[in-house]
Image (cartoon, rainbow, N blue to C red):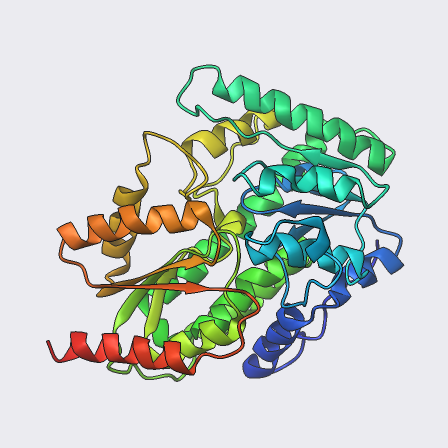
Length: 388
């Protein structure tokens, strides 16, 4: 694949560049994926939460973050039970309706519902559908070697699709590209925490989200160009409550919900699309890059309700996130019908209550279109904090 697949932001003023990112993220036809395929490229779709995208990038494929879409699951509904989260249905719907076409699909058994997703996908498409089994006991001394083996198994499927072997140097180059991407995303979140008036909640979300729709080299170029201009913006701080949003690790809230929050408070940290930022530090690129990637997942990663690691109690990690962000309150959200998310709400709110940190509990669904009632509830919550 030669040439850019997302160039509409280039040469534009900052606001126009950010608008191009918003348009891309809201487009359910996934135009960048179509352009990649039209140029002869192949696409590897991977479901939430974390996936080592370096494996498919090293083979010359486009890693595509399967994150659902605001679509009516007219065709997909019949493939699932009624009481399941929306993201499973809309992800399959996007593929069944040819809004997005893949050459490989990878899922993870992150919950009872998602563990069957690859099998359902495989019955409806003739391209390979794989399951990546991340370690259930990450503290075991055998976990790193086990995960290296899983990555190697998956890499063989990627190589078969690409029609070539992936060399160690290919993996090292990809790790370097993604290390730069991780550093740029950390810089974006530093800006959110330090000066949230410089970047709106929706613009920050779209800048992250674009990374799952375009090659990482293009994403790096975008972030390198935009971040300095965001810092130089002539914006003034307002008297707003600083809030952490927790609960969007898998299904994503509608962008209109993120916009609404941006109108009422400063979202100084969150777990939006956390899989694209899951590794918190650079990955080594030594003699065994697959082992380096495995070790990074185990030892240098953040948290989510679907990873169970005694070294990273999720309640403690949330409290640390609140402290590091200098947040005044937390919005503890969960996608409707999401069992892991709803279960963690209980633990999160208990920990916040013990530390006397104000919190607001809510649910969302990616297809929701009315936000007036929720906006009123959030505004009331924030006003009570300001005048308490």
